[in-house]
Length: 309
Image (tube, rainbow, N blue to C red; front, side, top):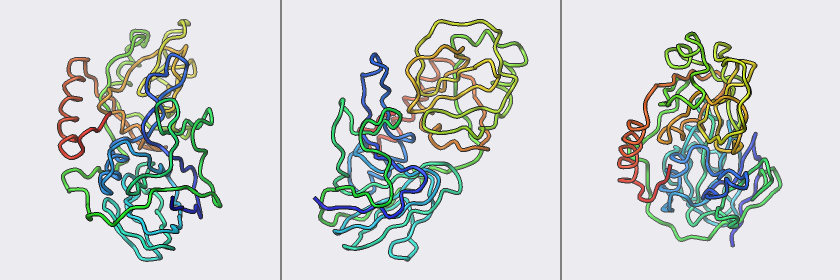
């Protein structure tokens, strides 16, 4: 197996692939890429299936040296990279020679970039997945300078670039379709307007577990609830009045009122929310949510069959 050497792991770089599905009953979320569409696009560029393990690089840049030839692609938040000091485009495949150094630049908008390699990185299967659940130290640890990661040697394949019609735009303002949560009726009239009629800013507390929302109006009527199921995309409202939008690594149960649920079709966008981003929750209903998901999968699976959201 060939090796990649981590020269600079950046703020947080982890290996994410197939989620660990079907383990929520033992309090284990699926993990996997925070933005599965950008992850799948990077894999598509190098000829892999959508859920092959790739590197998820958070905010800052990261650098790697390859001891064997390799075909790589970077998609997601980073809009630039360089190979041996030569600037190259993201959203397309590149052939690296043995000894080449790849530097993925910092994200100017969005949060997470994905580095895929033809044949995939060495990711042991655990609990049905090939992803890292960082809070419980399951899977590969966060990658740091001096570490190595194996990858499958490959022959040069066809060059690919993401078609213009499939390129995701990273922005600091985003709309997320959401349905009212089970405890939505605990919000007063001001809180309901704040949730669905006004933009809300992402606060400084933001990671794969979730993002704090800067909106003190979202304070439900004081009353405890029994611990209940939560999912990526659940908006929980603690007594502080600053709700949390849960992300891909969030816990499986919680005791705070659930005032909204981002629909499955839009959850990939949660992975690109950074502090300062302005979010609008677009109220919808379960029937419309199912139709949005159906249409989005129809669109993306035309390019990447087998994509799961």
